[in-house]
Length: 456
Image 1: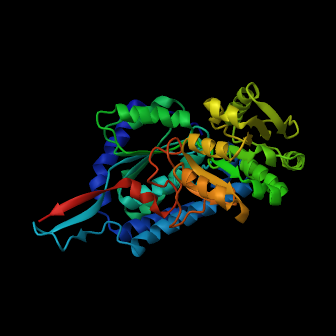
Image 2: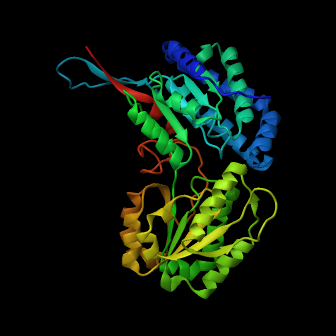
Image 3: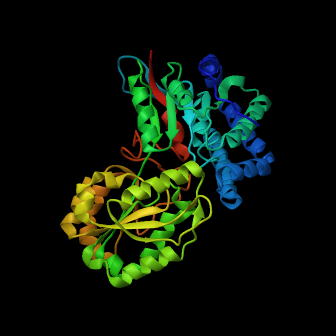
C-alpha cells in the first residue's frame, strides 16, 4: 500500500479540524477519556500479530524486541487510563487566606498537539506512544506525523485509534495521522499557528532545526524535544580495581543493546589512566568480540552510523571493533580510545553516534575527572561507578553530574526506562529542550497543561 505525503492543504485542514474539536474534546469527562484509552488498548490487542509483522518488516527490530515494546505500550496506556481515578488532574486549589476574593488555580489543556515520533521505538514512542496518550489525558487533540522509516506501522496503529474513536463516541478529529517522507510536511506542521504544543523524539540535528522553526513563529509554543545524548559513565579507581572485568563486560553490553539504537546508550566511559591496566583492556577486548553483531533499523540509520564512525576514525584511535560482517546493515561494535586532554579540546568528538559505538577516555588524574564532568553538555543519563573507598571523589563528582542530567545512576548502566510514577526521561540541553518535563512515564501529561487562575 502506497502512502503519499500530505499536501500543505491537507496539513492545514488537519489542524483546522483538530482546532474545531478541541473544546468538545477537552470537556469530555475523565471516565469518557479513560474509556477511550482502554478502547485503544483493546483495538491494539486485537491487531497484535498484524502490527508486529508490519513493524518487523519495516524496522528489522525482530519480533521478540517488538513484542516487549508492544506490551510496554499497552501497559503505559493502561496506566494513563487509571490516572483519572487516582488523581484529579485538573483540580482547583483554593487559597483560604486570600482576602481579595475567592481565587483558585486549575490546570487546563493547551490545545492541538503535534507529535513527531521516534524511529527506534515504532510502538512506544510513536503513534500510540506516551506523547499521544498523555496529550489525550490532558484533553488535547493530536496530529501525528508518521515516521518515514516505518509508515505502514504508523498507519496500522492509527487505524486502531480511529476505530477506538468510533467505539468511544469521541470527536472524529481528536486524532489524525499525516504521512510525509519530505521534511516540508513536518516543518509546516510545526510552523502552523493552530498547533499549541509539539513533542519530538529524534536526532539533535532534526530537533534543533524544528526548535529553530518554532522559535521563528509569531507565537512560539512549548516544544518538547528529546534529542542527542552522550550518557557519560564515570568509573572511579576502586570500582575498576575490584570489578574491572565485570564492568567492561556490562559496559559493552549496554553499548550494543539493540545495536546501540537507544537514546540512553553510553557514549563515553571515563577511567583514570592508572586504572586502565592490560587486564582491563583484555577484558574489554574479549567483551567486544563476544557480542553478537546486530542488524540496524534500516539502511539510512546504518549509513549514518558508518559515516559517524568514519569521522571518529580520522581523529582518534579505534581500540577494537567486532568481527567484520558482510551481511546487510549489520552494526559493528566500535570502541574508540583517547586521552582526557583530547576529549576536552575537541568538542566535535562528543556528537552522538547512533549505534553500537562508544569512547574509552583515559583521564590523567582526579582533577581532570572533575574538569571533564564540568565540561559536559546535558544528557538524559549519567552514571557513576564506585565503592566505599571512592566516597571522597564520588562526593565531589555527584553534584556536578546532577546538574548535567535527568537520570543519575550509581553502579549501573543507563539503557532501559521503566515507565512509572517516578520515571523521568529528560535532561538539560541537548538531551531535551526542557529538562523539567518527562517524555516517558505517568507525569508526561503535564507537558500539555497550563495553570489558569480563576478569581471571584
